[in-house]
Amino acid sequence: MMEDPVRVILVGAGIRGDIYGHWVSEHPDRARVVAVADPDPDRRADAAHLHGLAEADTATDWREFAAGPRRADVAIITTQDVEHVAPAVAFAEAGYDILLEKPIAPTERECRQVVDAVRHNKIVFGVCHVLRYAPYTKALRDLLAAGRIGEIVSVDHIEPVGFAHYAHSYVRGNWRRAETSAPMLLAKSGHDLDWLRFVVGRQVRTVSSFGGLKLFRPEHRPAGAADRCTDCALQQTCAYSAVRIYQDHLAAGDLHWPLRVLTPRPDAESVAEALRTGPYGRCVWACDNDVVDHQVVALEFDGGATATFTMTAFTTSRPRQTHLFGTLGEIYCDGTRIRVTDFRTRRTETLDVEVPVSPDDPLLSGHVGGDAGLMDAFITAVATRDTGWIGTTADEALAAHHLVFAAEQSRREGRTVTIG
Image (cartoon, rainbow, N blue to C red):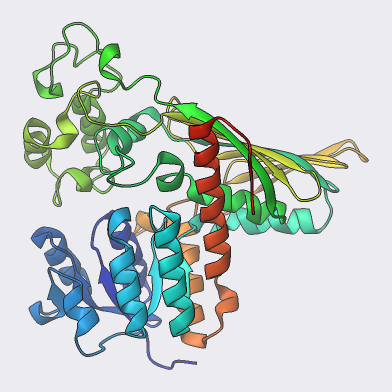
């Protein structure tokens, strides 16, 4: 076991890199960031300030660290989806342990390329399927293992993305086009399908999926709408007005996500400028987006259990909701509360799951505690060289991605796909 803190290189200092970096800063006895690579000077400078780094410990290009003398134990890679493969392979070949933001890569071939590099170099490897690490996931799996509802027969799982979140990330934002990022199911909901496999505890044998882009298309643009929300006469009545969405966050004093996506150091002036000139001020009906805004996936597992997954943009922002139906009872959970009904006793029990929140750093409660749980498990695995702490192996992560690609194939081709 390592006696010194695990040394970390942040490859990407955007929102996800910032979250994992904050966990490190909260646990200096266990880990410390020793270098950061990011092309954005403000994000790079903010990360350097948080972690007390000298200019020599920062770089605009991660290749400078991957090719140079080894300076850390771990590379945490949180670049954009299409930029995962090159740094993951390079740092694996340089012998670094790797924590890689999901998805592994946008295509199955690239996912296999990364996993092959991980296997060949025998490194500790984790994928940020953060839902596996949420406290309520452990509580739920303990209930299932104890036989509280008998054998699982079916599951209904929904991801309510939220209308404002969808407009931000998938209409105006970095994940709006499949060819420049990834399909919606992979970019947003890949860990939901992974989570369903994890909870049910069986392999998926067939999958079928339907969905499309319903609303955010040019033909649905309201009469009188301007190309930019700052110029629009409908600003006060449009649900998707960028001015309203981001002003709400400013008014609430929430200066992290999504405002830091618009500008590294958000305030009233910088946000207003971003809306006047940047991509996040565009009308949602005047963008170049093509990813789906609603999708359902039907799964059949070995043994005959079934599950449905629904991803929809058309909700308020709230946690995922899951209903599990068993031979002896049913369970409903929403990330912080689990309600168990036993058919035998006719009783219902409600369990409140505590989500650890740092009063000084609310970032660490992300994904109902899954972000912090992931970092705790991964750093422990690196320090102890015991990969049992990691919730998903490289092969498991690859299988979860394979399921997503099969679901997308089903949606595009209009047929049920058998999982090999």
